[in-house]
Length: 127
Image (cartoon, rainbow, N blue to C red; front, side, top):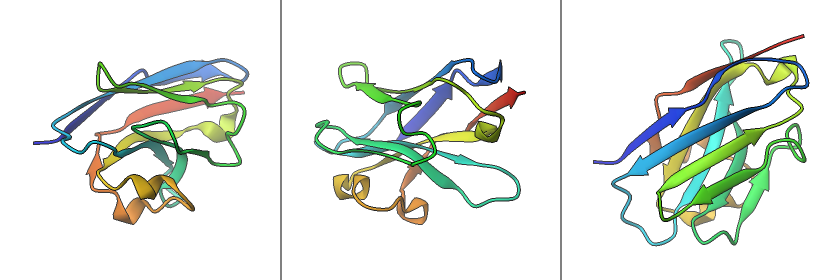
């Protein structure tokens, strides 16, 4: 059973920071694609940042590039998203995602193809 458990969401002022964490259990592949997606009630789920387990492939949405570095601790099976210089438009439900196909870390995000999801954590940024 694969489980992804997120933590670290909450409220912040514009310009502030938050750090999201995700602990993954049950993944058996040697090189997976791990990532963060976000969604608001009026939009489709969009990719924020992705990283392959071996660290070779890292990709970001243009809207967060330079602000939201993604990182991982493979020894702890943990994935992180450091959210800096937050903007009100970053307000969304953030989801941790995992898939055994590392190539999903390349190209455009394809949330419909991702196999495993966390329950989501809300991030709210006020101006």
